[in-house]
Length: 263
Ligand SMILES: Nc1ncnc2c1ncn2[C@@H]1O[C@H](COP(=O)(O)OP(=O)(O)OP(=O)(O)O)[C@@H](O)[C@H]1O
Image (cartoon, rainbow, N blue to C red; front, side, top):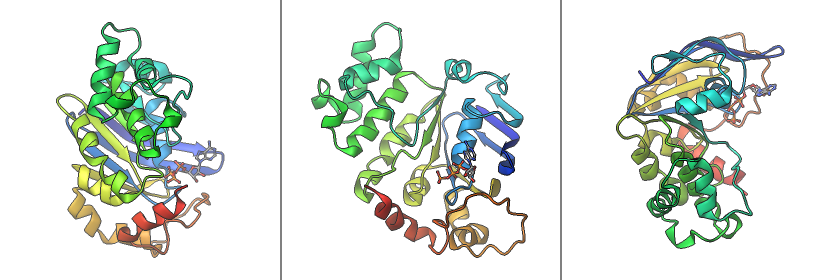
């Protein structure tokens, strides 16, 4: 396994954002992580990438990485994107990708190839504000790939996209998981997640409530209940700030809900 996270826990004061979460990602896989708002998805990426302290054990390749600072984990090939794009508006697209590339030789050539791959070659000299929101999201993916990750942690790459733009991310994301590279994908667009992922984990209140292939997970009663807000399991919910966005909708309606939230 490329990533093995075992019994990972994160607490923010009295809020247990992650509780004994065990997950794995193998090389070549796209693995999805879904769950209602506040379920702990971003916290999991934070824990794996070293942005919050966590309990439990996390192995990346043959190395135990918990306790390592974020930059050391990134140097090992654990690269993340953020919900809010962190593009450099006053740098060209090529220069944005070069930032991801670092100091390895052949940067410009590789940046050009990546921009081409993401359909951005015609805009190489333009600046991020000149792009549509969908193109900006693609640029963030190109930049992340430029750092040659072994595991890409994608935090809501389809946020703010309409369903057509979001569906257009499926092939590029799939293509990222080749050979030794793998992708962990968080997104509220469950259509995207189910269409692109080999396996999917579902978090609710910081715990894994389902895991398996997309067909199995989408049919799971526990998952339906989590999204419908009818989970009557009596679990000691932790007072986390669940804003109810996951309640009262079914899996198929998540898409339209997400679009309504889009700018
Ligand atoms: N820095 C923080 N300080 C305090 N509480 C936090 C912090 N970050 C996250 N939380 C809480 O931890 C829980 C999990 O949040 P997290 O952002 O990981 O959920 P999520 O599943 O990614 O949600 P969303 O889908 O809304 O992005 C929530 O209750 C949230 O309010």
